[in-house]
Image 1 (cartoon, helix red, strand yellow):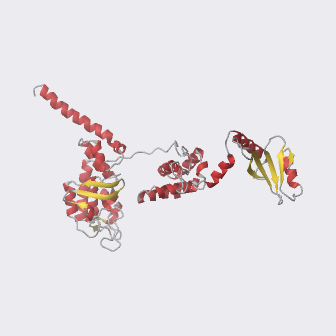
Image 2: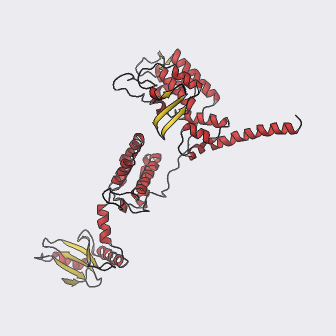
Image 3: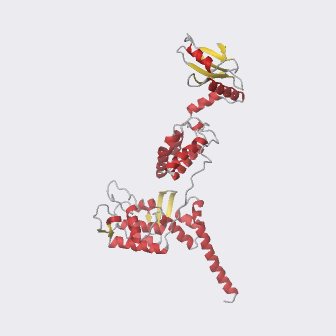
Length: 418
């Protein structure tokens, strides 16, 4: 063991000297506990040596190789390590914990797998992980990820897809919240990340414009007329349901496509709830659909008389009410979507800017406009969170104004002797 003043020049001179025949340690003259050692291969390594505040044997923390780490950088790192040890912080243990820590990708993956999300939700999460999180943060150890790292990643994600960037940050935040409460099943009491650690919290997300498009009464009439024409006379193929018919030829639209649109409009159901609907989930005697699994879990959809008649008018071709191309076959699958027929219907009706999901909004806005309370509308739509139904609160206010005016006018009339 030797004592030297560790500087850039002294280290350079030492590294040019003859290779020792055994590992030799050199301690700094000024900073106690700071040093470097040189092995029989000639490699030099900076280290910090300290005794934990609670007592016990000394610990030696490797700081980095000579050449990779400069002498002044190594001195500062040693100073911090020794100071932290005096405060009761064990950097050697911290580094050991860091090496054993899951990466961000592994933490998010375990969250997705363990939480047993619905298939559609899990697939969305995996897409966010693969496309946005993994390329920018995936290899970072979960316990050393900082809010600055997340902010920087969110900024890069936002350049490609602002909304998906928000979803990715929320997924990371949820994974950290879960990781702080859970850990390896074989290590009781050990969590994946420290309690309270969540570098994805309080990240300023991109503004998202809430889109609410409701069909007017005249637009609903136009869409109804277009569907009648489509399923009877037929419509030109240029925007129609058929994929390979000659352009300009009139093609009659599948009655299952128009039935699906009408059922969504009449019930406020989600698209997949109708397209995935099986005959054994339909109870026409009681006028309900009993879905064993929906976006919000088990769900009952009430059918108005018009919807019951639509379902009664459909021929049963397979397991699904809305028959798809594989209806009745061994590997039957539900219809994939309604994009082509819906585009044709809207074009013929002269209605623009309306998505299939807006039919659900139209159902809700119609109910609120007829002075039905938000709790009732939320129950019909299957909202698990009452706050989701609050998007229609302004419509409820308008309905309330009309209601109070009608009631007030009637009472005022009585008071005036009318």
